[in-house]
Length: 141
Image: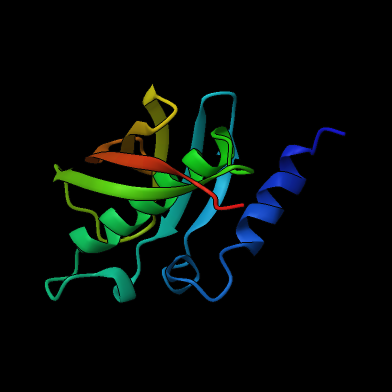
């Protein structure tokens, strides 16, 4: 039986309990055949001292949605997915509202994956452009 989008998102967000994702209020909000979108509120708890979104919080959002996308779109019955490297180019500051991170695959190999993660504000302005590489490691039997 195919899970509804609402049921899938509820299950995905429930998996974030007691994690960094819960601490930063990151939630999965949409997905399709080849993408996953998460959002994070921009509040003082994710600001740097001068009152704008901290790049580390942005990177945490990007890695969270990218890693989760690998879990969703790869064979996790037989493999663990782990992050290898993340890069983030911060292009614009934001101090309030929400930021959205959309993860899509640039490469979906059996062993390694490369994801493009575009972080935008509510007006769809590009805030950061991130790349995440992940690896599939076989589960021991």
